[in-house]
Image (cartoon, rainbow, N blue to C red):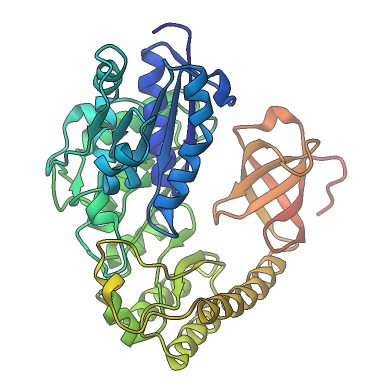
Length: 446
């Protein structure tokens, strides 16, 4: 398979980005190189997400774009991976006769075997089997670093079964990896130049509840921070019900733990939270956020919010807006509710009209935009330590990076700083980023 090209398109979350990197690592061993031109590819993989929106429709539309390429090059292998692949399975092959392989998230480590069957045996392959255990070969491959940052999956699946969420069905039940395997991966990434690692899981607070885990999540964070070469440790995502005081206090004990917590609340209404099956009340959520803010005034708190959930009244939406104004999140990732096939909420009465959901989303996002900009402006004049990621997207003559609180900062400095931690004084604030002056710059004045 030497000299072959793969075009890989990824939709969705950070978990999917990590899965795509695992695929690319396997494909590299099989002689594939990545290309941004699908017309040149010998293999096309669409890595899908089914968490929000009409995901399966988007997948069929994307597959359709590549149909002419298959006609021109019959040897081209086209595949679909990820959550939609797991959800749709055989239906994808039936609806798309030019599709060759379909495989779910738990079958990425079988990619060599899947491709062999599709190319040598000329078979159309569906691999959607799920397991309640984690084999070392699933995550034994070191994710190739794309610079100074990398992500490491510490577990897979979810046991929460929130009424709106498809994840437990597409990614399976919750299973944790062994701490030894995770730390080996972190150490290998550090030796390749990675300075910041993000530990990934659908609910990282539940790490250790299953599989081969031999440590608690706070213990795992301490291990990762102790790896030589690692300067920063992040994690995503925390479930508000399960976050422990041990984890909250760890932010004050471990200096490498970034001052940012993503704590999805989804709604400010107790009635809606109960229908969602979230397992906490607004008061319980607020008690944990308040403790974070009391202990660490500089911490950045972000969240997820769903508007227009079935049965959501104007009073429920007001409760959500009250929560946003009370907490004053640094950022909110907000979405209109959309029914996911197979979930409990898809059959709930009181499905909201599109115009109602759209208006509520607009109100929420406009309010949060003002809060985010105000919180960014409060940082002007302050010193920030920035992990330099490379050239700024908007201004190539500038560098760009992120603070410990996960804010983007653009500033002028030598390109040789890429991959290092730089001290920057914040001079300007915008809704989605900050601008600063590198402390060692000749133009810097205290």
